[in-house]
Amino acid sequence: MEIPKLYQDYFKEHNFEQMTKIQETVYQPFKQGQDLVAMAPTGSGKTLAFSMPMIETLVPKDGLQVLILEPSQELAIQVRTVLQPLAKAVGCTVQAVTGGANPQRQLKKLKEKPEILVATLGRLKELTDARKVKLGNIQTVIVDEADEMLNETKLEAVRATIDEMPADVQMTFFSATGNDIFKNMSKWFGKDFTVIDQRYDRSYTAGISHYFINTGSDGMKNILIREMAHNKKFLGIVFFNNSRSLHKAISDLDHAKTNFVALDSKMSSQQRKTALQLFSSKKVTLLLTTDVAARGMDIEDVTTIINYMIPRENSEYLHRAGRTGRMGKAGDVVTFGNSHDFRNLQTFNDLEIKKVFLNHDGTFSDKDTYHKRKKAQASNQPKPKHKKRLRDQKNKGKRKPKKPLQ
Image (cartoon, rainbow, N blue to C red; front, side, top):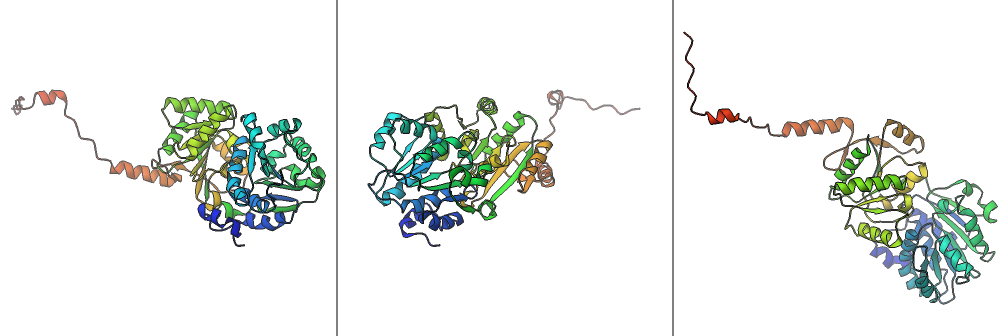
């Protein structure tokens, strides 16, 4: 499919040469108003997949028509940023309402009557309860990161939000992975959905290499992270399973004077925003985070993902891995752990994961190659010069030759 004329300048500006498979497949069904469940790997271009056909359904100056639900404030802001130039091209506006941001400032922006609203569930409920946002004229709802948005803690809130919309509202759900709810969407939402499932299409992730490094203590993990971060081409994200492990590593790396930023759900909105800006602008090339950043965050040219410990589930691994190798680019995913962790990792995904060692130049080698390189480096080192003993130097030229034995 050729790039629609409306988006050709946008694609050229962002160095996109063609539409991805998910973008091509979703385009017509979305424009036709079908209810969709669309799944494709992270980094496959799902945001543009729903943005392009959605933009073409808008009627300028006709009030709020599209609601996009996001699981985090970072992702909501990111999607709004993607949408702004596209909406502007058709004379429409987009606004984000998220927790952690100034509510009065958001209310002021809502008075501009945007055609598209990107929202997190908590802040949206506050605004709908206060009747500052009305959903009665919504024509399309897009639930992004749907496997997260339809988990047991958020499902009922999503359903209650959609119940405030017209009965014929177009429902669309986009995700990189599925969950049990996806198996019976008609039961939960009362509609028959067109399902587009490209999760197992390896062409999206062909540029990603998966590695495992056998490590013992956290101290050794931190040494390896510092060595990787010294590579000039490195732009990496280290994922932790919990805040406790994250903050312990922060303390250790701080002590070792390592340059990094951190992202955690307990940080303020401004702290999180600043950390992401420093990292995405490459002023700092190492980001430490919990899974708050794994969902949909699109940061260009990330070279390396490091799992500080084995993820708890396959879906966590896939979402983390999706922060590199996006849109067909190359990238590395490195997991730290012991032999037991390696066996567990192999049970919950069918990826080829190689056991490797880290070289001094930041590259990876298998066991044999690593030891050959070490041996070659050792043989090329100049032999240390033998230093004369201080006593010998002092007595130089003063010693009398010994008399031969009679």
